[in-house]
Length: 295
Image (cartoon, rainbow, N blue to C red; front, side, top):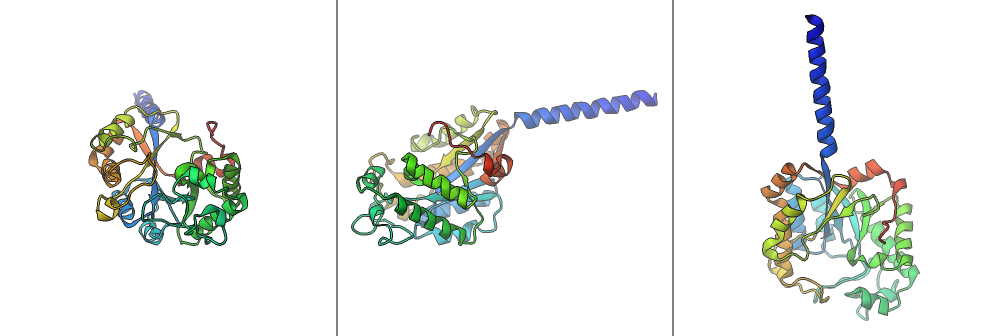
């Protein structure tokens, strides 16, 4: 009798272990990356709201922008947030511009006559930027970030300008290697449809639908552009024609979608595990970074 009881207990343990393993294997990994942090006060207010939810996510900070120091203060002491550098070579907002960390005289081919970055990639290219000046400026942004007091783990690229040409990407890869930083999209993560182009009123529903269809055989990357719809953000107009109209309302809608209880419900129902770049880098390891095939 005792022998059968022991066998019964062992069967329960084996069954539980198998179910547990199956549950773990069926979990879908989702990495949320919030871009443009530090761009302005309203974006910082938005990231503060995401921080307060306690969810793991990654925050890409624009260390060239006037409000980056406030972002630093918000992000300190929150280990669930991985901080990266949103490497920036453009300043795309009407009446709200910024220039290089290294100073306009140090990188004259990267700036306009007033010392500001150009609003578009096309305008940037038209000024014939010098490779040595691109490296100097990206290095200055990395140095500022590292000395901010934040634990910097990765880099990515605002408007993709820093990877717009193979020679630019080579500079970014060289600097990431030198400073022992990860590069977003170099760890096998795949972009899933984001909310950027969705109508304001349907962004949340679009996100929840996307979550029901993400893959379990990859790390799914959701890039968000968040903000609080206040007078500051309402006054900002994108100089590029592809920018969404009513930008402040679009960013508010993205914020509302990811801090809503419905978002956490969708995460639970769809067996999704939220991760950040620190966790992904720890799992894949920096030396295994690989340039995305599509780029």
